[in-house]
Length: 95
Figure 1 (spheres, rainbow, N blue to C red):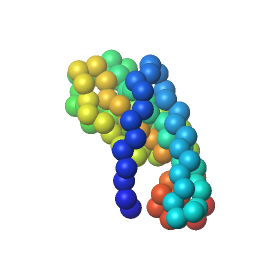
Figure 2: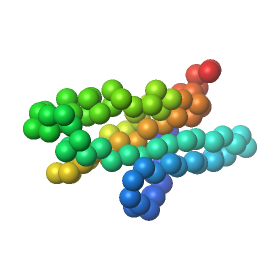
Figure 3: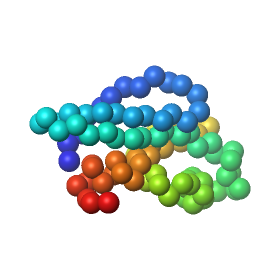
Figure 4: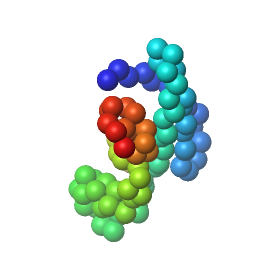
């Protein structure tokens, strides 16, 4: 799979992103969500950060799959999700 980078503006809170792409004349829509997960929201904020991310993701909507985990800061980690239908388009699977 090829990748391109698309800059998006920095806005607070969840960012729902819809991208319509045309590749070789075929239009497809892709749906992404970027969320900031704050370390202070972990039940044990001094635990290993990987355990914290796992804990936060355990409660997440199953219609969205983790696509990319961004660089963490001292306060949060940005995580990009892709919607189930878009994941099928990206990986060529059938629903």
